[in-house]
Length: 343
Ligand code: NAD
Image (cartoon, rainbow, N blue to C red; front, side, top):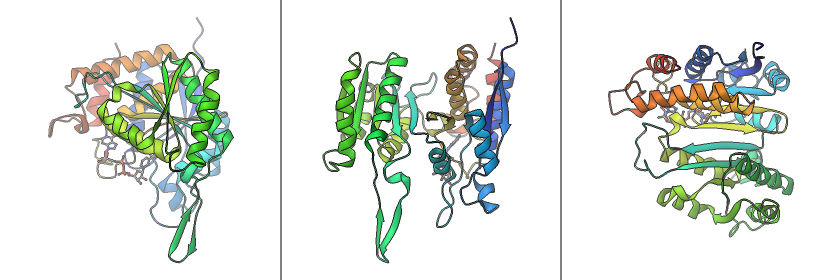
């Protein structure tokens, strides 16, 4: 057979632990023979320091526009005034309206919920809502933030959720909103869900108020399959859900649009441990595995995932966030074990 064609992917190692977890992912991909060619691009803190207020320079945007595929490390958001979030810049520039966050129990990772059968995907609207960042001061003492939600915006995220449910053979889509209070904005998402739902008769569907959703996620998380929700709600409940199965060190996500896809870890730049060789690369590696499946490289995705799962299940070379106090190994040793388990 011919050598498999390689796919070029824009890689933004990012800030803090980003370069460490990216390097870990790159090495594992190389060892597994994943058919990926990385095109390294800048984004985040170093870009802000150069005085580019979007946090993402032209060359980076051009690289993503050309490759339509990117893997991104965490980007530090400058706190205070002036600069924007580079993450928000990328999401809005490429109209990455769907943020997909799978949440499931992983082998070897013990939590109070182990054995409950948690396996869900949170589908978060990614460009509208209060996170569009449209804020201003009405008077020196009154700040206003606009919550904008559009019918097309609701429809495409709801269709993305049903499409994902069909593609992954899932049974149910739950729409979580605050429609009882915000009848027009959140209410629109609920109404569009109820209007579009009948086109997907094979999928069970229900609506839940977002605060009860948070409650149910803790009380009985195994009841959920696919949850579709607005931007800020989704941000909060997906971090909550990540906590149910082992925390931010293992949670991957995909930002999908019609013209590009950016895969990333859910976690941030973890400045407390940056540069110390302690970061857990599982989240970014898992995001990169999602990317392989997105481009149809199912076999190598399964090989890498298997090696990761074996390493986690063995439990002997886990990073500090996953091990009892004082027993964690460094990123390097963890990566070595994953590579050894590639078979
Ligand atoms: P964080 O995710 O960086 O850290 C939260 C906690 O989790 C810390 O205790 C950290 O040490 C730990 N942690 C996170 N990832 C880990 C890993 N891979 N291995 C081991 N431990 C890990 O959240 P934060 O401290 O709120 O944010 C730090 C910076 O990251 C901020 O500037 C924030 O804006 C940015 N951020 C970026 C993204 C992104 O780029 N997608 C997401 C969240 C936060």
